[in-house]
Length: 158
Image 1 (cartoon, rainbow, N blue to C red):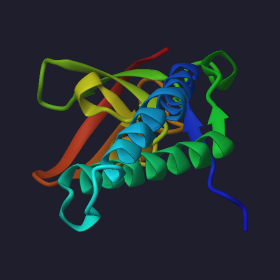
Image 2: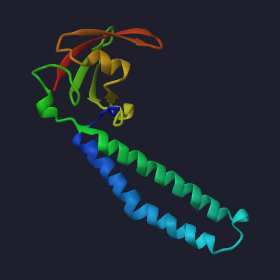
Image 3: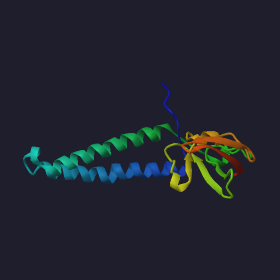
Image 4: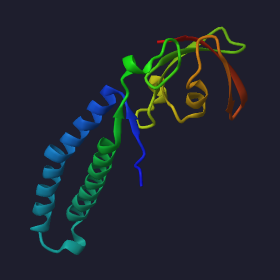
């Protein structure tokens, strides 16, 4: 089985590595100490601190496993190497104009793990991201949205 590639910008990869390091070197050891101290308090069946620490440790261990899987499958988006002239690709910053509006929107096309609509980072697997991939300046694209079909025009790619 070929694992799915996880596309990340260099910053996204750095953020995941930092989170992994913080969880493994700081938070997990702290929870293990808390769990040990709670265990020494006696009756575990009625020990809320023990139960809370055990649940938190399970959550942290799950996140560590998830991060390790992501880091193994990570493919770093080299935005300089990816861009072929004015073609939209992963790592591209795209300015689009929404039809019937005098306002431009700027989005950065990233992998699904870095997508953050509030920061205008959209996944290459989102409807808009899929429609933008491979397009060039001046192209018009249609995207199905809950409110109906939206028409966009690509103004610039960097």
